[in-house]
Amino acid sequence: MGTGVRVVATNNVAIFRHLAAPPLARLGVTYELVAGHAELMNAIALDPPAVALVDVDLAGGNGYAACRAIKAAEASRGTRVALILPPRGVMPIDRAMIDRLAESGCDDVIAPPLTADDFYAHLAQLTSLPLRRDRRIAVELDVDLPAGETTTNLAGQVTNVGAGGVGLRLDAPMVAGTRLAARFRVGDQVSPDTRAVVAWCRAADPLEGGHAAGLTWDGEVPLRTRLLLEQVALFDISDENGALTVMLHGDFTEMTRFEALALRLAGQSDVTFDLAAVRYISSAGVRAWCELLDGLRGAKKRFRHCSIAFASQAAMVPLVLADGEVLSLEAPYYCDPCGRDEVRLLEVGVIAREDDRILVPRLTCGACGAPTELDDIPERYFAFLNH
Image (cartoon, rainbow, N blue to C red; front, side, top):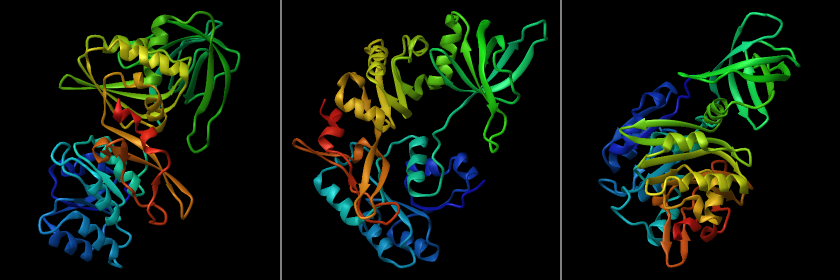
């Protein structure tokens, strides 16, 4: 279902590439490109958009002044403005730029290059676009039932995996107490027969339909089953031109094992980790993660969209990043006038360093429009920048 979000953007090639991507069109996002300051202001005056994406280096003017003008005009006061910085390395960000961003009243700051997912996250921060966080991986279960019954094929989704069993969402119910042999199928991977017991099964939320069930393992779990389910629950991998991106999910705890991921990454020289969906990391999870990175010594490692849980650990334990580079991370912001907490995505290219101080943009509140502040001590939250 479309959202009807309209965007006006200055003609930035990196931004245009993301705006023109089919997924945004399917969500109902439309856009108009403008060449310079005058054309930008005319387009916004004629039909104020939900979002204006404005280069700070803008032909016929500058993005800071354009942002102030958009915010000052009655008709476009509701337009959210994200200022686009020059590509990293072209113009170093310093205190003067941080001050100019704050004085402009901008709602967001973007520092290309960035991925399509991170660009989408910026739009979601500014609009009604849904944040895409929840994830379930479709699996097939070949279930051998007892008492000579024929094999029943059950389609389902893995919702969580633990040391003692697996949570599922199923189309059909199963009877609690049933002992069964299950084979899990993910793509062309198939686990061996794995003995389990149906611990419970109940109707799922009426809006979602189907049934939720929990299986507990019955005896030793085959290694191939455990590795396959860890992969399903913990990570996805995409491969573009030999550069791997690993998308991690869920919690890193004492039950987390990275053996399947370590096997997949063996011998790789260039890996990017996407950590947006990592919700929680315990001290045992930190140890397991650091062991994984230790096996990637010599490989180029990047970390993007680090969740607050991951970024907080990285600030305290340098080994969480090993010798890798952080590209972007979530940061907690707070609006004092309305008491609202916000999580904002920041590229590292929008963070300034001045001697021992770390300076971050002041972004406006999505509810009341007042300036927000980082809800932490910058030198502590961004301590990884000094490692």
